Image 1: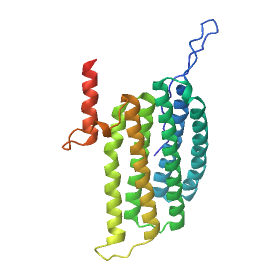
Image 2: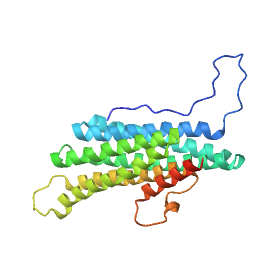
Image 3: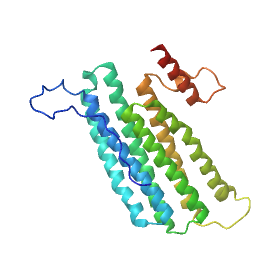
Image 4: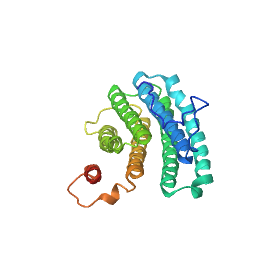
Length: 254
């Protein structure tokens, strides 16, 4: 739940003025770097959500609002940058630029959901049962890890990191189901505290996980030029396994 640093696509080296400058940087490189920075902010917000709910720190949860505002700013900046140059670049660059736009749209929504999570946690005012606190902390920690992996996937064009995200999404869903069982079905008839807030918080984290899963699929498309879903040829394998099989075949061809 601590802050993390992520590698950014490198700038052109200009260490010595006597060395001739290389060709102008592609438009996509700058926007990919800014998108990676936006991913870092979203990861920090998820980390603040996890630590904030685990420790009951209202000041820490309050920091999510500022990160949500930062993500809004990234959204506007990258949307403007992409639309101004997307018709002037190669097909490969255009795909990268559109990936950046899709990323910040998803990240902005994740920021909104984490802010909703924080607002519900503050409304519950430390009335959440320890069992719910533990499960919500697990969900938020998983979300933070998913965001960290998708950030590395984007920065390093690493489809395997994106696949790890796809596999993690099911863990969040299982925790959501566990919390819903306690608060909605409540087979034991046990008294529950702050059920409305807990359900809202659970939904926010689950939906944020869905958005990160979409970002992971976008990394796969960015790396391979094909959608994960379009690689579906049989129904007896998980979709992420089929994508890994397809990547292996591409490597063998080279």
